[in-house]
Each structure stands twice: as structure tokens, then as C-alpha cells.
Figure 1 (cartoon, rainbow, N blue to C red):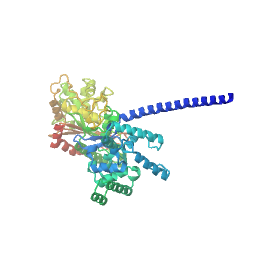
Figure 2: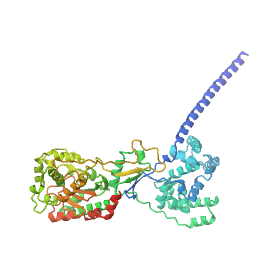
Figure 3: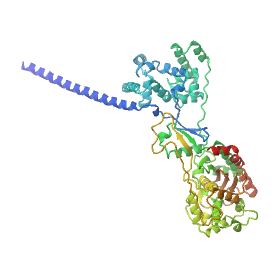
Length: 602
């Protein structure tokens, strides 16, 4: 009796222990899945079109497309921009009951399970469009039961947060179609060079069919076409299209077109712009579908490149060692708007594919004769008459002063008043010389082509340039993008140039009025009605500078041997004149009525 009682007691203790452990297990599981549910709910709560990382688009000052930023092709397309048949093609392919379930389709899952059991492998997933959407943002593609469970829970949560149309809009702009295209907008461009709203029925079915295996089908037009035909058959079976529409789509020839190259127009400008954008926006914002309106002027860039090409080949023909010239000599240029302080065009080297280093912004070379106008301006400001120290016969021009080697004469005269005056002037124009001395007066100070352009802009406006040049005018967010912009950097960037002048003591003839600068230019340069030009070429120099001025712009071109391994060809007076006049394409562009109108509208 006592032994039987002991057995009962042991059984009761075991049952109690099992009950306690069972209770703890159930409680732990409940707490785990409650926490898991809260986490999943938190993740899904913020999902919207804001989460779609679309390409930032860069436009010229006239609205023409320049480049895209932000990795693979992805452009946002609103759902109401698509044809109904395009939407139906995706629904019949991926989730025909999309508008009739709450995020999870038991029928679709059961069908997928039967197929998987039959083939003894994970062949189908049975995921709805909502499930695919949450998976693309939050989950991996590993075929695990735990992942499937999370996918279903998150899909149900998302259905309660967003409308069906909002979910479908996110889905169509998020999914991968192959060939580097993400979203329906990029897919239409990559495969057909079309806007998504212009897709035909056959093309819509073709794209919808790609989602089954995008990487595989995008590489084979035959397989993709066969899959598209299956989509059309399903649309007819579901009575989404008529028999006549089906027959017409089936006989329609689908021609895949090679996607347009995404090589940047004016890549040196785009690289500099991207670097400048980093000062105002974080990386996420820069790649979130902004529309950047730049200061880039296509006509000015074309003219600049043409002149640079002509100058480079002219000197190549004059060179005694053409092979070394091709290897060692570089060229860079910049077109600068003196009134708005905009960069209208930049070429940072002779070949972007060989070297992405932007010499227009970062290569520093001696000024040489380029310093002459500033020496002259300072001397005039101190009451010196240039005609008394430079023997020119008929008039004083910068070109003549250069030929007559009058730079040392001007430098020696200014030295009487102190070399710091030139140092202060250049510093106020945005460049702080490293040394103060006779070398500075003789043009030994090293500057970049952009710095030269900004300095010469002072001669036209008598207004110091701002510390930073302007590459873009504004950045407009896409319609759905609101949250990722930093509060301290508004999208509309306003650049305020300095409005102070640089007065000179005892300045009787030249002061701070813009006309003073124009008068000085006319006195120092050989000028036409619209432009003046000047080339600095000295026998001992490794650098040729070319400067073209108009009332609105300064264009600076530098050509030289960066490492000094080759001596540039020596040009006589006539050859130097020819070299300078190679810029007639640029001067015609600067003088054109179209350009003047563009400047006034800007």
C-alpha cells in the first residue's frame, strides 16, 4: 500500500513538473512571438513609397538630361500612369486574387505545397504580391519555414496599413526585372526604350513574365517571349482581354532594343557636381530620386571642347616628339559665368576614360603672363600711367606687352609700392599666395584654371567672386520623397555672391564700378566688339594659358606638361596668333544672340 502511494506521489510530481515546464514553454513562446510580432509590426509600419531608392536625375540649365546618380536603374512610376492592361498582366502572372485577399492566399500556398511535394523540392512559394513586397524590403530569399511565417505575418500587417493600390504601386517600382532594371519604369526603358505608360499589351506581358526568373529570362529573348505568351494566354483565360486582343498581341513582333548608354555627358562636370552635392545632402538623400538642376550649358561645353581639341592637335603637329607629346601633355578648361558665378562647362583632361582627375579644378600651374592685368590694375590704382613705363608705340595691349617682355618692367615698378599689394588683391579674389616677393609679381604663383577664371571675372564686374563656385541651382525632391532631407540643408540652395568691391587708394581712373573693369580690359587687350582673347606662351614655360573674355563669361584653357618631361613647341609671333585664334568657335558661341538671351533668362 505504501509502495503504491509512493508511485502515485512520483507520478503527481512528474505531472506537476511537466505542467510547470509546459506552462513556461507556452509563456516563453507567447512572449517570443509577441515580441516578434511587435518587431514585425514596427518594421512594416514605416513602409511606403519613401523607401524606394530611385535614381537622382541631373539636368542641364535648360532641362536636358545629363546623368543619373544612385547605382542601378530605378525610376518611380505612379500607378495611375500605367495602362489597365499593363497592371492586369502583372496581376494574372503573380497574384490574380490580389484585390480579394488580406495579404495571404491559402489557396495559392496550398497549390505551391502540392507542387513542391510532387517534385520533392521548393519549386514554388505561393507568395502573394503583398508577401513579395515585404520580402523584398525586409527578408531574405532563403526558403525556410521561419522566414515564410514572418513573411505571412508582415503581409497581413501591411494590408492593414496601406491600400491595395499603394501596395501594388510599391511592388511595381521595387521588383527586379533583370539586366540591371529595378521597377517597371526602368524595365520599360532597358528593354524597349519606352516610358512605362507607352507599353503595348504584348510588351506588358513580356515584362510581367520576366518576374518569374529575371536574371535567366532577361538574358534569353526566346525564353522571355515564350513566358510572355503564357501571360497573354492567362489573361485571355481570365477574360481580361478579348480573343481578338490576344491574337493581335501574339502576332505582334516584340523588338528588344539595346538600352541607351548611361555614360555621363560632361563626366568631369558631373563628378564635380556630385562632390559639391555631398556638402549639402547625405548619401541617402543624394540617391533618393532628386531632380538636380545644374548650371551646365551644353553649347558652351561643346565650344570649349572644340577649342581645346584644336589647340592640342595644333601643338601636336608642331612638336618634334609626337609620341612623348601624346603621353605627357594634358589640357583642361572651364567656362565661368561672371555675373551668377556659375560653372557653365568644364573639361578636366584630354580623355576621361584614361584619367578622371579634374585638372580644371585641382591642377595648379604658374600664372606667368596671366598675372599682367592685375599688376596693371594695381599700378593704375596707384596713379601710374602704363604708357610711360611700357614703350608700345601705338597703344598698350596685353598681347604687345607680352611680346615685348614687359612683365618684368611692370613687376619692378609695382615692387616700388610693395609686393604685398598683389598678395592682398589675389587673396581678395579667392586665392591666397604662398609667398610674398618678386616671384609673385613675375607670375610664379601656382593657380588652377578655375581660379584664373574667377580672378578674371573681377576684371569684368569689379566684384570679387564668392569663395565657392556654383555647379547646381536647386535640387527638387520626387513627389513622394519628404523625409530624408536634412533639416539644416534645404533643397533649394540659394547662393549669394559677394557684393563688395575692392577699392584702391589714389585710384583716379579705375575704381569699383563695372565700367572701370571694361575700360581696363579694352586698354590691356586686343578686343573685338564682343570678346577679347589672350594666350600666355613663353619660351621657358611648360604651360600655355588661353583666356577668352566676354561681357558675361570668362573661359580659361590650360595646356602643359604636368611632369615637365617634354618641352612644349616654341611658337613665333604668327604661330602664337594662329594658336590664339583657334578659339573662334568659342568666341562665336560667346557672341551669339542665343547665348545672350539664355544669359538674360538665367
